[in-house]
Length: 78
Image 1 (tube, rainbow, N blue to C red):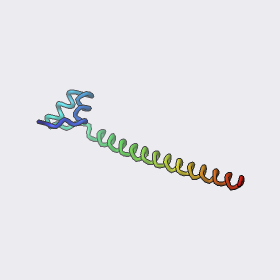
Image 2 (tube, rainbow, N blue to C red; image 1 turned 90 degrees about the vertical axis):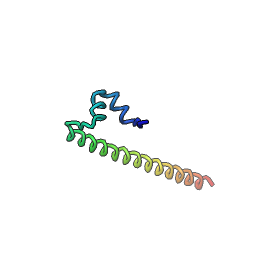
Image 3 (cartoon, rainbow, N blue to C red; image 1 turned 60 degrees about the vertical axis):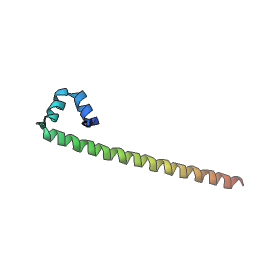
Image 4 (tube, rainbow, N blue to C red; image 1 turned 135 degrees about the vertical axis):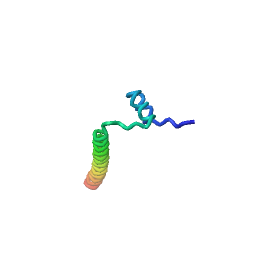
C-alpha cells in the first residue's frame, strides 16, 4: 500500500495537475522560483525562532525584575 504524505495532499488540493505531473516523475519548469521560495521559508523560520527566543528572554528578565522588586519592597517593610 503506498504511503500518502501531507505534502502530496497539499499539492493535490492546490493543483491536481501538478500532483499528477509529480507522480509521473516530471519536474517543474520553475526550479529557480522553487529554490527562492525554499530560501525565503528558511529565512522566515530563522526569524520566527529568533523572535520566540527574544520574547522568552524578555519574559525571564521581567520575572527576575519582579522578584527583585518584591524582595526590595519586603526588605524596606521589615
